[in-house]
Image (cartoon, rainbow, N blue to C red):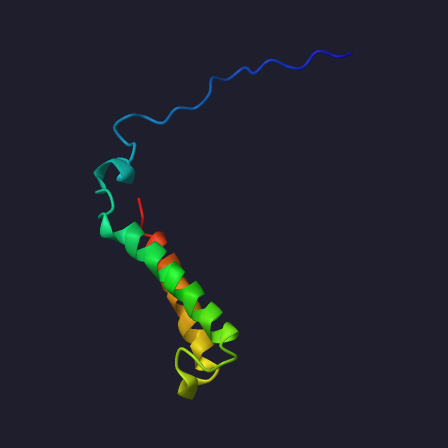
Length: 87
């Protein structure tokens, strides 16, 4: 079996005076309300959809019809938007 070739050059390391500062060390941690609100929105969205289907489209708001689906899924999408900002 042939022997693999040995690397002749050293591994490149950028100069220290040009390295960008890390953004993670300068960013603040998330506020406490953010994950709580996101989880609450997920629970409300799922609860809204379950109530809508189990009540045979009578509740939570019968006049909205299929817009109840938009409210339930909208709450869950809003929670994903909040969770994307969580550090």
